[in-house]
Image (tube, rainbow, N blue to C red; front, side):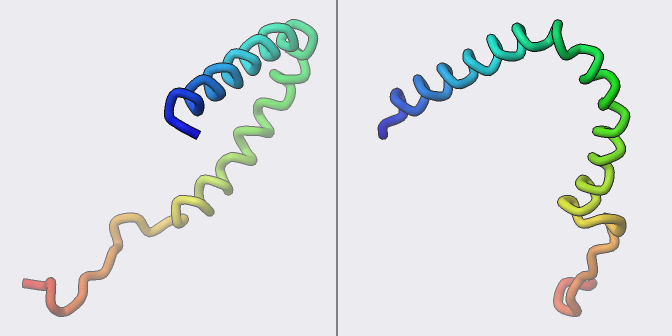
Length: 67
């Protein structure tokens, strides 16, 4: 599959997703905003898991790299 073909499929999929979101939003707006706080709470542990948790900036250097 060449670049133009991949780009065409990506554009078609993106367009279909936008149309679906536009049509579904008015009917499911209350459900979306009702679940939004829970989605944010669920995102916090996922971000810690995928980004290595706490301890950024505590990278240890080997003996060779120390001055």
